[in-house]
Image (cartoon, rainbow, N blue to C red; front, side, top):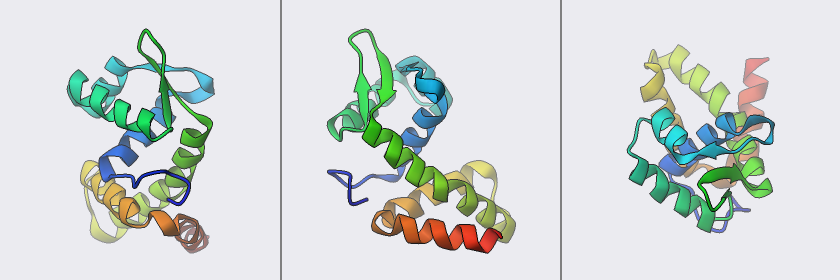
Length: 128
């Protein structure tokens, strides 16, 4: 993605999407909730959150509450606009289970960061 200071990995995209879901209505979320949702250890979640903080996508308060920054919300919205439609198309075409499909879509999005608007437009026009 051109606005991100560093390239996003499939794992960081997945975390960003989960954070976007958990941080609805401007509410922050604790690292423990993120780890539970992602089914990873708390140290793994902490490490990824540090990476997202360094990228300017996440802010972490002193006592552990995590929030998306405005840039993080924009990035999450861009990825989410492609994530849902692409998952649906892959499940229909390939019959993948949901978790495998989500993993594959995050890998595709990581490789398509510079083309997200075009990908979103193509996916949305195909759904109409």
